[in-house]
Length: 209
Image 1 (cartoon, one colour):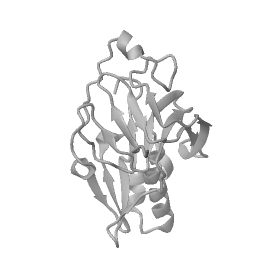
Image 2 (cartoon, helix red, strand yellow):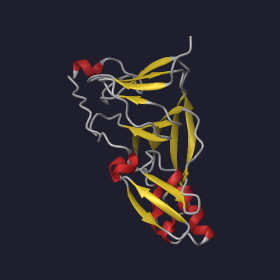
Image 3 (cartoon, one colour):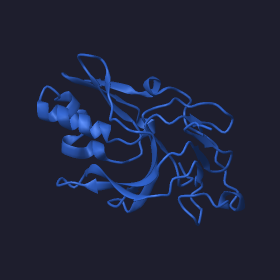
Image 4 (cartoon, helix red, strand yellow):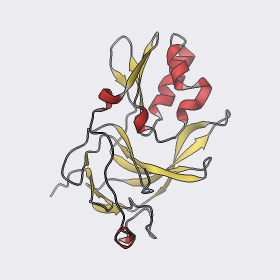
């Protein structure tokens, strides 16, 4: 029997991941400029049809849920805006690229800081170098806060991502980051409502977002 790939937010509890989705650590690595420049794969977890990922940040079996959310009386109220990406994004126009920016989705991955910043490179996108950097940095944004658009075709430029779940690690900030959903994995609310499905999305795993 085929299991649909999806993530469901359980009330005051973990994320229920279904559909045999791969789970791997993804490490933010620093380049010559002292800013995050690329992603490197880390440890892979055993494949499972279904698994539960900690959302409260208190599990002693991270990244998996061990039921601690019940003991600590975790209140996991969903506070994300119920609007589409484009409805909340601001648009910046450049000569060769446009950029949409939904600030509320920022996960502080900082790839956008590289080489003067994604915004400045979009403004200078008549330069092949600036255009390449703008596309690279926007596509490395795990939350999909930043999306670049081809001026001629009007189409978004997105990284090709197979459906998978990554656990972000940020050695520069000395912290573990969010859960990264890749490749258009559907996300469902605790009450069955479906969030907009996007190619890139990040979910809180510390319980404090």
